Picture 1: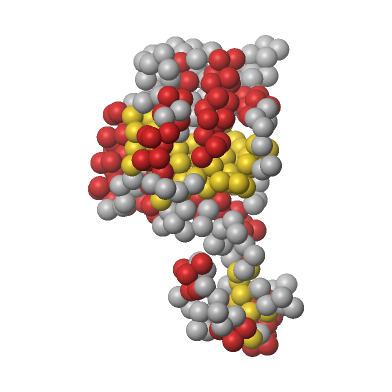
Picture 2: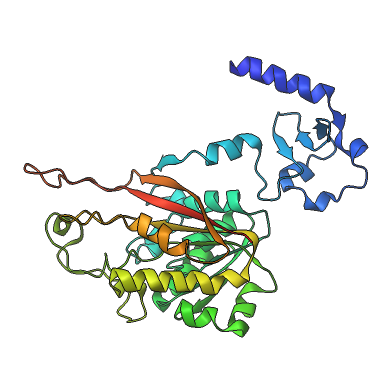
Length: 337
C-alpha cells in the first residue's frame, strides 16, 4: 500500500473513531504513555473493545500494552531480528565517548535506550550487573526510566558519573564490587532499587576470557599483542575459563531473578569466539543453554546487532577464510511461572 493510501486509511479510521474521554471518562490518564497523555483531548479509540487508541497524526497505541509505550509501527520495527548501526565516536551524538572509551567495549547509550524502550515503560527500573562505563544507565536516562548498576572496576563507575554530568543526564546509583556478593546483600540491593522491582535486567558481560588472553595472529593488528582485561580481579568473569564463566554467569542471573518482576525481561549481549579446529566456539548458544537451566526463566529469542563502526581487517588473507565478526547477539529471556 502506498504511503498516501495508508495515510488516508488512518485518517478515515480517526474520523470514524470515538473520542477517548467520551469512551473512557474515568480512565487513569497517568498510566498512559506521555505521548498519548499529552494529546488526550484529541485522542480517539477504535475497535469493539475501545482499546485501540489513535491520534490525529496516525500514531496508534493499545490499552492492553503492558510491556512498553511504543506505537504499533515502532513495535514492529524493533522486532526485526537483524539490524545494523554506525554510531559516532565524536561530537554530540557520541554521548561522552571520550570519557567512556577507557572501557574496551563501551555500549552506545542510544542502542541501550532503544532496547530499554521496548522492554519497559516510563519510570520503570532497569538494572545492569556488569555496567562498565554505564551505557545502560545513560540509555535509561535518555528515555525517562530509572536505573542502577554494579561493576567491579571503580574507574569505570567514575567514568559513568563523569559522562552523566557532562551530558546533563540523571546520575543513577551505582555500587562497586562483585555482583555475586552484592546481589546476595538485600540491604544494598534495596538501596540500589529504591523500592521498585526490576522490569529489565540489561547487561553486557565479559565474553569469558576473550579480552584477557594475549592476542595472537591477526588480532595483534587490531588490539596489539598485550592482553586487555577489564580488571585484574579473580572475581572478574572476564578472567575465567569458559566452563567457570558460564557457571558464574548463570549464578549471577539466578541471584538477580528474585528482584525481577513477573514477566520482566533479562536481556544480554554475547559475542562468539572464532572457531578453533573442531571447536565451533558458539558462545551465544552455550549461554542460551546455560541460562535456560534457571527455573522460571525462559529463552524468547534473539536480535543480531551489526556494529558497522567496527574496523575491518583482512583476516586470513591470502590463505583462509576468517570472518570479521562485527555482530553481537542480543539474547532475550523472560521471567515466567
